[in-house]
Image (tube, rainbow, N blue to C red; front, side, top):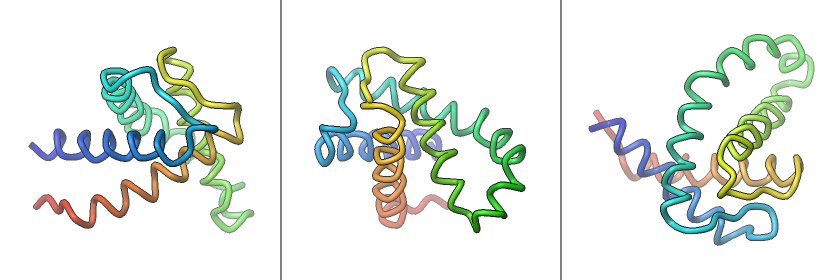
Length: 114
């Protein structure tokens, strides 16, 4: 049940991001956004920890700001894996990933799973 709630929060964050920043991020339809939420969740669960561990020295050197780049890379990778979702370059991926992160953080505070 917690996995479905996490997916729903990510799905809602993706919908909000497409609404707030259509110049940076867009999706074809709701089904595309739903599938993209699952792909982004898998990329963040499997690939992101490995990349974050490998980039730990540069993340410490930049006082954590490099984590924004890592989030953008994971978002960009997820959009490359699913062609029905569009992002406008690497800067667009960083901005969209930042918006998704903030919206997910806010929504997770409303939906608490125990």
